[in-house]
Length: 112
Image 1: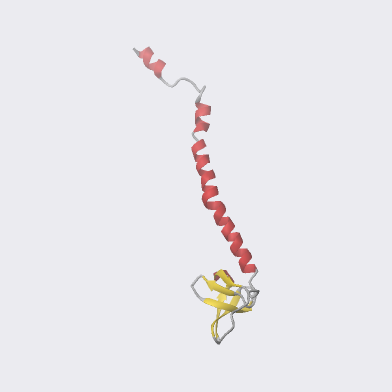
Image 2: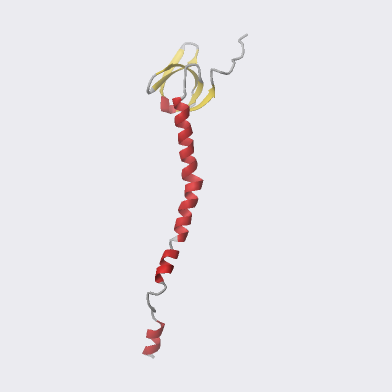
């Protein structure tokens, strides 16, 4: 009876190396999926945002992350001066600009 119990016990280390590596395959596949679905698109968005911030110039119309719409009237290394209404100007950090609405190259509609 005891001989049968020993015979059914853990055999040897013959197939454990392959099974051990096979256990990591789902984890590796999950990392690859996360990379292509989450990490890579986020890095692309950050790169586009950095290039947009570095290309800002006077006259561009922008939207800040706080929701202010304005036209750039002054540029510094770290700050922008936005005109949000006639003769109303605010300073915001460059990194707070979330989108560019209109560039100076596009014609503005005439005022009536």
